[in-house]
Length: 370
Image (tube, rainbow, N blue to C red; front, side, top):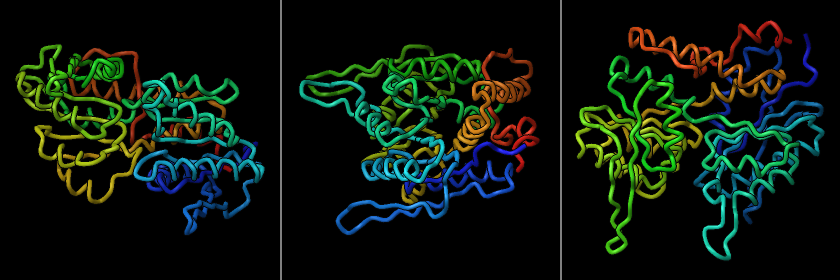
């Protein structure tokens, strides 16, 4: 069976390592090369120019490009130019794979005479001609509504990336695990993860004393003697994260682990984490860490790649199959693994793709070979 559209994958500067891992998972399913090289250069005046090395006319093109630091604005411009160039080169369908959606924290007016930056970014993506958008663990879910119905928006929940790594990391100790939200706003996100792990949930109620600008951390939930997993979508300065970890320790937590989808890690964040009472931190590769950051965090750090989730999503979009069904069929594998570890722990309805079987070849290998 031949494709109606040829699959092609390109990537911007920010997401090269992640894109190469995605390609490594997808390439074995095709007899032709799915890689399209995108030559990107920056002129002396700061302007960006780019060109696709080969023909993409009629292709189903996926562009992997995070809008992330340290070159957030340049990375956004690269992505916009890559989409525009693809449409002008007659690519049939262009999907933007955005591991980290920059400006997502500016989803509303925070004060008078301020912009809604997230809306402007979506408007720019729409104007560039994008046909579909895929984002991992977007900070404000309402941003999905900024796109019109003619541009589908696929969202990959962050906990799906980590679930297998968490099960492998804790083993039988997962019985003593409690998932902790560092603030009230992240409670729903943590509840999704806790449900998958059959774990309890606690919440850090953070209040600021204006007089001395000191954060007071109140722990809602019993963490005494527990292994705590602080879970958030973004770790930026790490100030709140490390203070939350300290509050958990003071309430009798046996160990404190942290998990975050997007490692912004600005300023002295890595130093704060290293010197804190956090025993271990899991971060995804939506934003590539610098060698210095990796070295500084040392043995406390585990990087978990979201490549398998993006590979599944790309495969489903290209073959017009259900991404939801793909997630569901693979979540069962994690559920079975958890049941074996915990010897009969009751199952849940949720599910996730395993890292080892990231693309369901039983489903696609007979139809995708060209």
